[in-house]
Image (cartoon, rainbow, N blue to C red):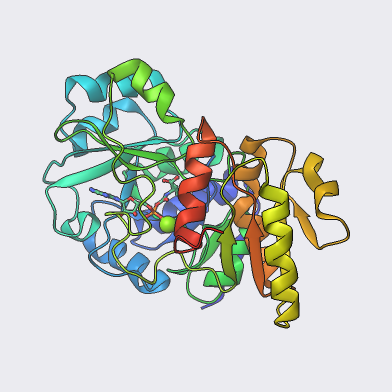
Length: 330
Ligand code: TXA
Ligand code: MG
């Protein structure tokens, strides 16, 4: 199959909406990461997503909608869900709710709940709107690869396996949506682009037990989320740079090719060692993480990533570092 890379014109969005209606799968930009979409009401369409990604059937897909009315068709909205919908949708938040029967079983991995999200991206919204159906979509990477934040990443992973990718440039947030399970006591399933503190302001305390698990309950296989490159990260403390430098030098002696992920202003602390700059702030670091991992893989054998404070998007970033490194903290 030839994979077309399409610019996000109205004509191309219409073309991709048509593909979705015809039971095909298409990759498209969202404000978080690129998604690989199919009609969520069509089981055989959704099956193609699992095949293209090599995704285990036990791992359910998030269903994307273009307006609040569509949520009603696929899920039961409770009081807390309504509050979060009003506050954060469209936006980088996914709610797990009890599902309605129209959603294809394969989408929810046979379970009785469905993840619902309304992306805050004009191309994604237009595509879903034009398709006229809710669109199930995981991140558009091959299973076990970092989420794609640029159309090139999708192409790298899925060229020849899907008919089209809409190129919307770099995703503005670069890290996936926050997932909250509201089917019981509110519980975070994945820290993400909406900081938890913002969510707790609206619905009160949320159970956060799984955030730093490197085997998140939503990550069903041990293979999930492994970059090709070996990763580790440093605990965040005053002596962090010395700690990282000591590890870096040991790795060089073992003939590894390490690189340090650091915030721009901390660069000098690493002397002449190889660094990849992650931006000015922790939010930039989170936004750039997946892109920089794909970049680092081309040249280095090990990433040593700086740790960050556990506040705001620092929580999200650390949860990704824990998973990517399999908990290898130095
Ligand atoms: O930002 C995002 O959420 C991106 C964009 C494309 O929307 N999507 C995304 O999808 O990250 P995915 O499939 O790569 O990650 C979604 C996670 C999976 O780990 C899945 O197990 C979990 O959400 N999930 C989906 N539906 C669920 C459900 N009903 N119950 C529990 N977990 C669910
Ligand atoms: Mg994913």
